Length: 72
Image (cartoon, rainbow, N blue to C red; front, side, top):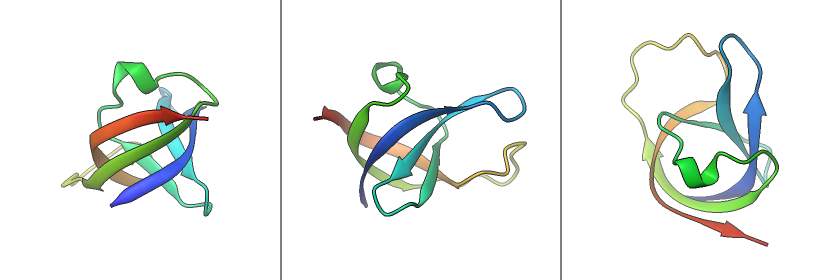
């Protein structure tokens, strides 16, 4: 799937990186690439749902990023 949105640092629990898509959906990359770990940047990613059985974060849907680029 292709997702366009804004990267945001979430300060819930121990903290994590999330992506809020342009349509408002919340996505939580399991391993956010270092290049995308900048609060507020616009990105376009190719991702798939992650097989994550348990997580301490109750925010968004877990994804694995396959490709990414910074836009804007």
